[in-house]
Length: 119
Image 1 (spheres, rainbow, N blue to C red):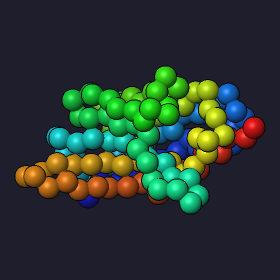
Image 2 (image 1 turned 60 degrees about the vertical axis):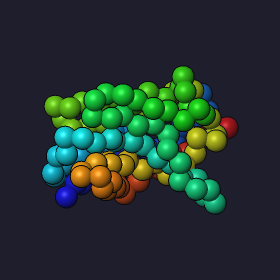
Image 3 (image 1 turned 180 degrees about the vertical axis):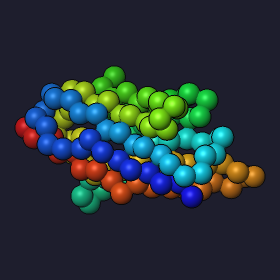
Image 4 (image 1 turned 90 degrees about the horizontal axis):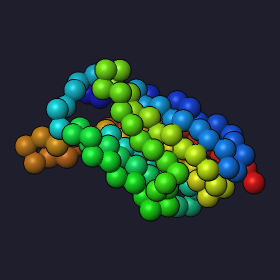
């Protein structure tokens, strides 16, 4: 019902920047949250940043001040600007679209994009 396509991952040196994009298509839900999660090898998937349909944003403590999530409603695209990257930011990053309908939460996921930060 909702398709998500991520792009923008890659290899970057510590201290560098990357911008991830998540383009959403398909059915639109008026109440939603779009977020970026990441999963490093051997670790659980964790929320990095999210933005609600009303514009409220949330960030993991580990990325506050370094990452910024924004949304282009016209293009149905969410961006994650990542600056001052650290090796510990290395992970597969996944876009998530969360809907809330009649008390039911549904998650849609993108295929993921790899971010690798070298020393």
